[in-house]
Amino acid sequence: FKQLIQLHRKASPKFRGIRKMAAVHPDKGIHAWTDEPHLYRNTDFLKGFDELARQDLSFDAWVYSTQIADVTALAKAFPNTPIVLDHLGTPAGLFGKVSKATGKTEQDRTQIFADWKDQLAELAECKNVSTKMSGLFMPVLGHDFHTQKRLASKQELVERAAPVIQHTLDCFGSGRVMFASNFPMDSVSSSLTNIIDAFSDIVQDYNENALKPIFYENAKRFYRL
Image: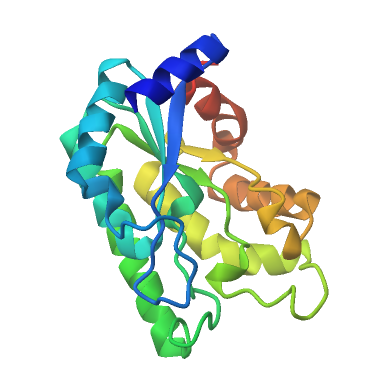
């Protein structure tokens, strides 16, 4: 981390933080984004993270929902470091079957949602943590719009995303949630316009006063822009 931080500081005065993906799923058929299944608990990683914390930088975390507890442990270990959970913790298989074993049945998907809700609520108790309302239409969540060779309508997006976003707002409030596009990764499922329209409708229905914080103010504050 120390060498990486030095390089970025030299490259730009706008450097604010680091993102390190740690997404590894117990289902080996789901793509792993690192070799270490619990990277955020790794001793060497934590030594590097301490350098990031001492230099007052933020951290973007990305894990699958089965690993959210790792982000919670990290946030508790560094309570003064701003951390943002990307993509709301990516509950793989929530909307349909992925790989050979994840999200196969309605019962499986109900359990994935219940576990994700519990883990997210516990993470939200860490006041140094925010989350990004993004990445909800990657195929790894179980969407099949790409196999149908079509893009989802705004209404289809609302129907699928509303329960997820509403729970997130219940946990984090309107002050610790920020919108992010996750394009082009989500482009296989729908258009950016549809996603923005759907997410903004969900947020407005939840709390019309939350639109400006979630779509502008929270990101500006978190990244000190």
